[in-house]
Image 1 (cartoon, rainbow, N blue to C red):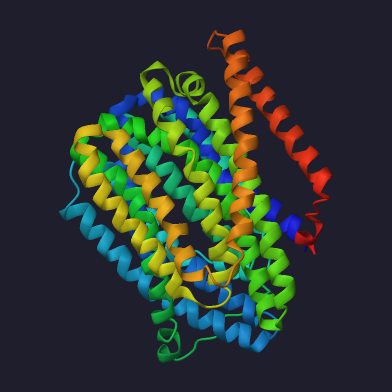
Image 2 (image 1 turned 90 degrees about the vertical axis):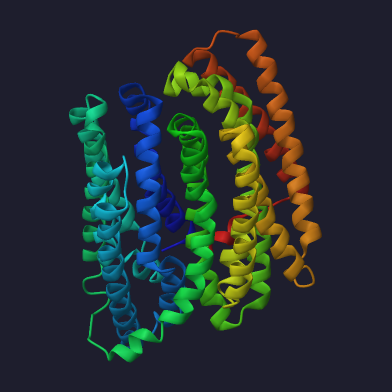
Length: 472
């Protein structure tokens, strides 16, 4: 299947995983309030950390390893079997640890956490890494989309008051488990499980654990910031931060989806020794990602103060203030993602990934500890900005002699200028349509899209840009 189709399916899969909870967010915000949103965010954040431990970096390691052996069916079956056996051991132990947390440690979020248990159970049968390594994205997208739609419908039907918050957690937890089971069924006929010696499974543990360190570090500043905001500033502030960050997380799904498609492709090219082709691929990918992320970042910053109260309700107006600066993390995330998925991981230079994200996590934790007590949720925003900037900076320090960073930074400058012009035009349009309505938001958004698209198309025609080779 072409890269374009795989990217489309994976974007759909990632976006529906995040987008449908986003669709229910305005309803949930008005039903349970800022405290309810903050409490659920705390329970889900802790559950997500346990799920990360259960998967142990397989979403990177598994995809890469399967992509490298997919042309040899015997080797593919054996590799899949060994990795899955390791996954069952780790995920099973993590499930036991999660239950211990729920019954012995959890506080006011205990009831919600208990109903999120199927998130940990789903790690036992989460085999998307194998499908993606085989370059199969369609079943993941279609089946998960169906399940998420059903879950969203259940939220509107059964969550009616603050006391129903546990239902919200149960619905999305169950949807995750069913989606993983349905996607795993798509492997039938494509790979066969054959029991292998436990020693063979355990040999995958160390490289997985290395990647897990970086995955966990990334999620320290993606989820632990919410835990810290709740602990230091209260669940009310965390509710505001949660809804601001939710929009950014949704948009970053585009970036991670494209990176997930590119990684097995580049890993396969790496095995074939197509060095020149890989270099062109990285250059085109970097420019395309920076074009997309600049549009998102400046676009969100331009409309955040109007969008937040319309979407979440007046109680969440401050979420728009948080959302505007937080949007610029998208550019940094996109830049680092291209380096990670198309340079570092395909070349098995996992230590670079580990160093960069661990430095980012350290910066985030220090910044949060210093800033949240005085700045509350805005302190978490500043900490996240500093962390996301740290990751590509560390990558640059290590890889500056190997990659054309000058060209990459030129792309950042070009599309940032286009984004700045778009932002200025959108704010000008706002003065002409001052009422905060969905119509005025639509007009502002349409104006921004028209200006940015016009600038990009004009630039591409002048420079004769061609992104078609990304689909080859």
